[in-house]
Length: 503
Image (tube, rainbow, N blue to C red; front, side):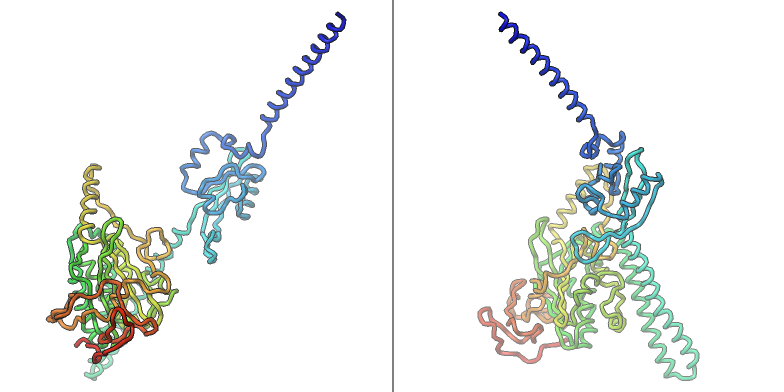
């Protein structure tokens, strides 16, 4: 009996001890859970009410820091800019601002240039950073990316400066020449000479003003409001007519092919101006006794068939550093040569905007000393018309026939999520160059020639398929038109007499 009592007493004591221990462990656990830790400070719970919602709608990159400079909250944009790495603020000047603001409570702002992540080219992001206290323990950092705004402002300044310079040159020349005419009033030959130069400068000024008007028009108008099916061979014929005299003086052969039965959908005037600018540039920048080829083809695309019109020359070519800028307003690869040929530096900018407003693009391939190929890519008429009708019906169903603004950029090709031009695929010539430079194209000699504006010659069959060219790899481009090749023999044979040239 005594043994049983002793066992019961021991069990009771053990139970009491276990209960006390469990109670102590429970209270210790509650105390530990209530104690703030570094990880708990990183949760949204420590933010004042409503702050998280406000930060989520801000366009600026947002970072919230605690007393230990650890990141409590950071937006996805902050990570994208590289502001936060490993849970810490990675930009030392911003971190110093945050510490100073935490110490004295003053709002601070600074503009910085941050290196781009992953480019490896030393490019910088322009940002504006503002730091303010958030409650008694936290600091809020807001960072705004100013890169695009600065680029647009730089483009605007350059545009104003370039327009002023381009207008000043002919106006100043006219002023000096008019004084020279007055001084030489007794010398008829001198007056005639100065008057001729005045006419040249006046023509240059007129062309510049007209191209500024054209550029403004294509930027502000929606060409799809006045669109129609346009035959590509007619556009090509019009472009050749525009450059016929200049090509004849330099004995440049104009050749066409593959444009029959191709139609694009758009504003005829704008499309003719764009293609005319490309052909005119090809003639102006080609040496004498060379060849300019214009070819077209239809290509399949996810949203509908596209029409490609390639203009290939055998000119001086474009360097890699200039390819990225040739579509900027007033940019010239060779300013002296451009002025000698009457160029204003606006032609390719007009081409770019026309292509963009028609839902297309312009691409360029070029190699110095070999020549260039510019390819205008536009929606095929039937596909574009169907898309335009679908958009119209969607607008009507939405309850309004609001005009759809054309989408443009500001002339810098580096922006660009929606850039409308691009350079060619590496060192290899694109397929567009092959047919436009093919020796089997038809020379567009005179408007009465049966081959004029058509890919078929008098008595000849159709030209080879777009992109087919049987060319000896080691032989330079631009061989005379009379040099024939066969698909199975790349050796040149049976050369004809010298190639025909424009009258």
